[in-house]
Length: 501
Image (cartoon, rainbow, N blue to C red; front, side):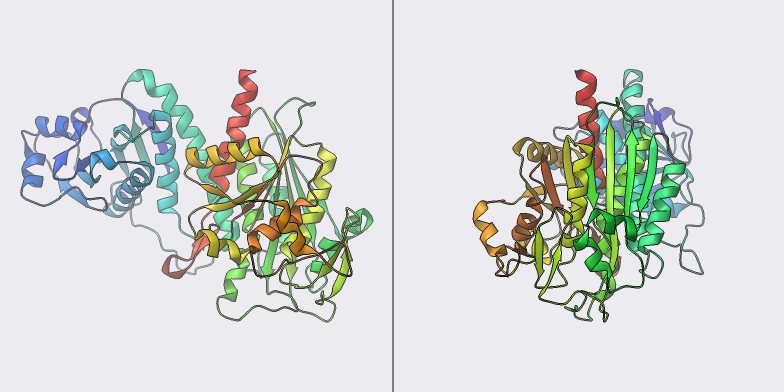
């Protein structure tokens, strides 16, 4: 879908459809009032009769409105004006776009971007409208014999700004939103693919293809023999139970100066997780194809960063393997040696994500990073602790934590900090190795991060546990593409900081 930024009054628009808002209780927004005046009160008469109260979720499509130059007018419920915040705004845009896509209007001029959202400016509203619109229209049809597509889908979405002075702001916001939306779509597509297609080798091929199509982006793939030479015993131990060879995937984006230290983002790439010898229950095991959503998100971020041609250096590292039961698989009680030289007693083979991540985090040292952020569907305990709204955040560096929390608020892809206290480290004690790979039932998300923290002492590091946010279950089951918006916003803000210096 194409997004166009425009200024202009609703009563002067010649288009297939105009979108304006209605607040509760039955009150036209300021721009809807302008259109109502041009139509001699037609809109106000309609809502006065009770056809639309203005509640969020309501829409009303009007045809052949007298006095209007447009073919259709779509009235969208916006709730109470004083309560219009971030999530309400996104819901309003979602309702509008979903309705538009089903009515046969291939283009529309949307005035919802001029609603007054608490604490938000034109840039935020335009960018969020672009991201939300693309998200609302996403469908995963690649593997269906019959595609589920609209008869005449919405192809051109024109977003308005208050005046010509705001056009440049809107254009920048639209470009950023489109890049983030494309990154989210890539992450969703990869996450939604089944494990028999999306293997470590498939991910490696996708990285190569991504690098071919993006400026300043290079891909490097380390094979099993390369990892063996590096001493990545933890990562390789996970892959022993699978016929699919493991891969260490590196995407290196160099948009900044050669001397500038890169941000390193590490994504967990377990393309299917049956739990290994500590096998998972059968119920919902199909959802373990989503255990590579950290890797998918990292790919999405690199796509967005390259599309925006940001003046910054970013490196993505994706350790990828399958975790399956086999005669050669890890057994509970096995001891493996990580790339760092630290030994690990594998008490539970289903705690494999930290085993592949720890070697990738050690590998990240060679880039002398300004910061390292790992992204992983790591623990079910995070879903218990936080539900499915924020991702869990744990870090060894306060300023990095603050930057990620701020980026989460700005992007709408929020995080919540959990403690990374030294007292939790005792739960990882082992009688036979330097550490165990699990810390018991209590504080599972925290002890998993404590494990990773033992491999991140040489740089500023943050861990994002996305087990509750990477996908949704039930009728709308599918990957969410999170935390692509969060991490892209974080990188954007770091790039803007460098420009100001």
